[in-house]
Image 1: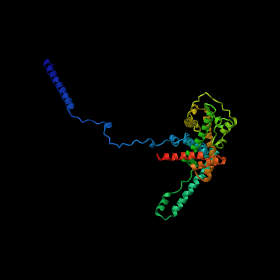
Image 2: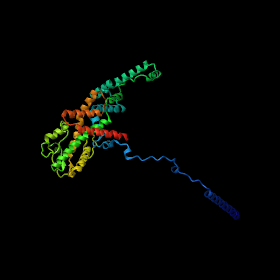
Image 3: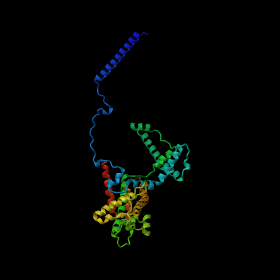
Image 4: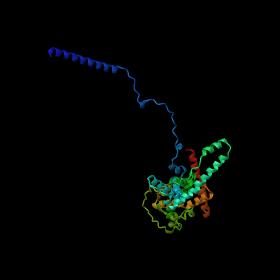
Length: 384
């Protein structure tokens, strides 16, 4: 290859390179000068205008379960009292049976064969009872309806008769036994829970108030259980309104017979914390003590130094528990005799009236308190 041809090729390559660069530069210039439409991001797209919702007033907010007690002016927890009466007293035996059936069903789901005969006698008896009290009446109602529709000449009844089909026969599976057994549960209305909790709250208020008044009169800084029950003490200024209502409780009998409470003057007791145990009411008793103390301080600032001992918190908690245990058989007796399955507020009121009348105790204070709290509850439900 000659030097001249090599120079010619180099010159052609240089021109081609310059042409390519020029083309790219022109293209680049064209891109930058072309008008472009702004791209709207999805988050920036204009949304249709929504009507402005008015901010609800404080009173319009739907109360939660924890707010029920506060809305009616008590400190004891309505849900906790209800749970204690329901699962730990009135329906305690049923809860035990249902729990055993649930465990047996879980074992079957894991591949193990479980027979009803292998379960406890109490479970077997309650399953039989459910068959007679739930399944048989349901079958009888179905047959009565089927006969009524079959005898009717109305077209709509004849159509319903055709759609009715046959009654599902009992298969005696554990799942079916659990279904029928659980339907034997005694139900408990919301109003009944409010009335019962209000009555218990009123009784604890009275015990705490008596203890505070008597402790202050004796110059004591910390209230003890004996300040509510030391009736022989000449410094006693006030007494319990319902001694006969709680005298039969074991915790009260122990206090009246022993009175071995030790004074803890000068020792500031920490406030009890809420415990997970559903049977414990010490946290709520502490709240009642604060409420009663604030009321007494408004009358006399001398009550400002009063402190609450752990012993009286536990004592009042035990009073609540044992009162529920004492009331439960009477509630069941009334409900069973009346042939009702849902325990309402009238049942609770009757039981308290019966006990107070039987002991010759004035009923008006506690009946008025229950009535006012129930009215407050019904009024609060209107605003939900």
